[in-house]
Image 1 (cartoon, rainbow, N blue to C red):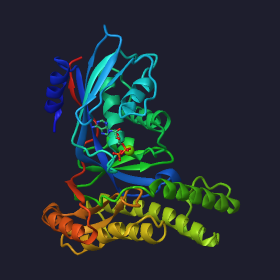
Image 2 (cartoon, protein in one colour; image 1 turned 180 degrees about the vertical axis):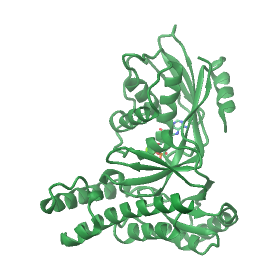
Image 3 (cartoon, helix red, strand yellow; image 1 turned 90 degrees about the horizontal axis):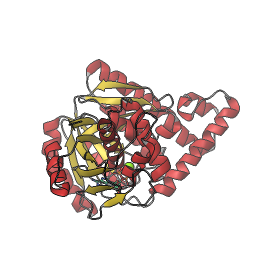
Image 4 (cartoon, rainbow, N blue to C red; image 1 turned 90 degrees about the vertical axis):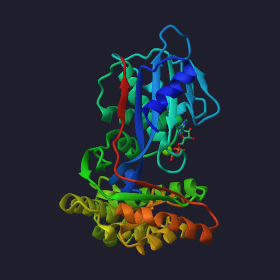
Length: 381
Ligand code: ADP
Ligand code: MG
């Protein structure tokens, strides 16, 4: 999958050449789980699967059209009067609605989407679609807004227009990642830094439906809010839950469940700092820190599943694997193993076969390095 493919698909669809093409990657979180909504730190990286958006301006038309190679139904809409549809193109039309500023107005457009990034697998295709749309529109009208502003715009669209309450990590990772680096994000201040990260990452999708996820996730958010409220009775200045120290949490004698949740959040935040410091110093990921993260998610945040635990236990047995843990919200979804590319490549088929015979489910795997964030692939403007 590349920009040429998107250009060909555009030509086939609209019998014309696109004016601009931008592509944006999916992401995986290396460490810092359930910290975004607690004001903590996260360390995602872009993966080498991308969504391409190719656009041509149609200034003399009254309607816009968007076609995705991965969807059977295409969209027709007036870019000056956008309504939410509940369909896949809301990610695109939402960006079109939020994009205009005093200096940037949009003409009607013809657009295509092509992608090798699996959708709804927890690799954040939604953010990749928003960010690639946003950056291709910026190229189309020569808008000079900073990438960080476009990432924030994309984030607002997912929260407010599409209506999915997500942290800022996904849009930041897709927009701001640099090849060969993970992206260290402080979710309270929205500061970022690039951290060199050369190791390979195996992403393992357990193929467990995410049915429990929403209710459990909402419950965790409420528990964290309640833990913060109680901690603030002792420390009114506490800015967010991740800003507390684990000792402070222990000293507060919270109800047992809340204490476990708060310990996960505060300890995980320290683990992000430790792992980042190690990466900067030695260039490699501390495997022990990844295993400790998983253990905390399993026992304190209680968002793992037997399938995710199975993966971590089995990855640990492979020579050349440095560490492993569940990634994303948990309750199904994906896990990662970090280490030597050849070792992970050699082990992945065996892992899949063994998983399938244990759980009667076919997993999916992707092997990746830290990839480049959004980029403009073509600009004929
Ligand atoms: P994730 O972000 O984990 O992949 P989401 O449910 O947040 O899962 O986003 C998936 C949605 O994004 C899809 O249901 C679809 O609406 C949209 N989407 C993703 N990839 C594409 C694509 N290639 N073409 C059209 N829509 C897409
Ligand atoms: Mg998403």
